[in-house]
Length: 442
Length: 90
Image (cartoon, rainbow over all chains, first blue to last red; front, top):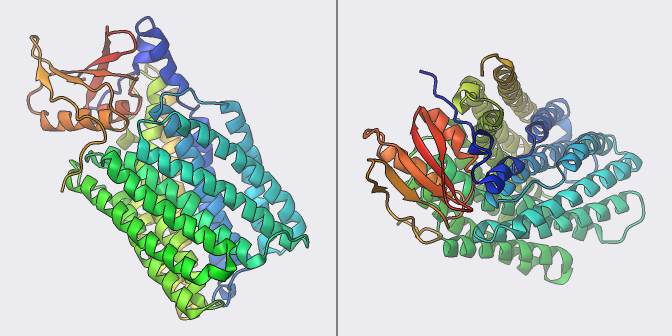
């Protein structure tokens, strides 16, 4: 028997509990807004792996600077990671904190600025065109500043979720630092420097990967993982302890970027604090999984676990990079494992699970019998995507370690196939959702 | 080792005179109410009794999970600022 989707009380019983219930739908963005951000994230992900596939010979010798590897990296960080962060956080936080969604039309409008700007930024990086890069970066910075304000406002009302708020506010501060360091790097490339190149680059990596995205991933895990697994929510004190360690690690890494004289000990301290933060975070995640009623999350769960393993591997890679000195492959590997191994794996683990859920939630607002999450999910492409993603990241790491363009190209091929599988899953989800919304007698 | 919940733990479900389970989940931060409800449904799946929940907000994220399990929610009269739902098999 097909399960029946209950219609939210707000729409079914407007006369009862009026103000509160009618506010429920106001806490949901129009479905088209988050889905557009997720769709763009899936396409940018595909574009990034295509770039790896097509520019494999550029990768082994790349140690930073303009070029196609930098373009691929920003397709992932801005297009996929930040784009999804906008979609997930602005969808979940107003619901969790009982707030009306602020400025939904603005959020919808800035998508039209953000997506072309990220595409132009990546093209400008690949083709080494600083003039294009400056224009695109200005647009991206403007959009992400709007996001930082909205995220901060949502978190301000999230007092009962102390751990999420601490991580989230840290992510907001880190995002501002990322944007400042991005402006500094662009200024360098257009010949108007206002910050040392090494400092700006280190600040960008520390605040972007570990600060903004890392803290957001850690914080939202305290909501998402219990939801997914039906495990017990960790205590506030433990969440705050883990968050304090993570914030300390990020602060030390930021300090290392800005204080060249103390860079080495500060980076070593940042790595040690990062290891402590990871240990505390994983202990809490294990606590959730140990009490979970839903033990097996399938490919989604394995991707999240792969993400944690990715961070556990990124930290020693960072330590080796510190010992090996600047200009070695270990610095590149450190960033690559952190971005693709940790953040991208974890994000797709979340997206695999949450996209059908959010789509079903939106359909339930409009339909008496909306589609269930499983009815919207095409399972097989998710498995292909997870396997191909893991293979692609491993091949890319091997390709860089062995300085092998062939392995990098194979990584690009596996990554492209995996990204295509995810696009198929997402397109099918939209098709099934659209069909459910237009079917008669709902 | 199990962690302490981040707020006062929810009072255990009780049976009312109509044979329905009752859960008061007001005062709990997300995602605790949703997790508590779904855990209850998993643990008591066999008894077939409805569950009446008292919440501070319309649990929009609960509905897809209920639908997946073949359950539905019906609103009941509640106190001011309260959302009271009767959850039962669809």
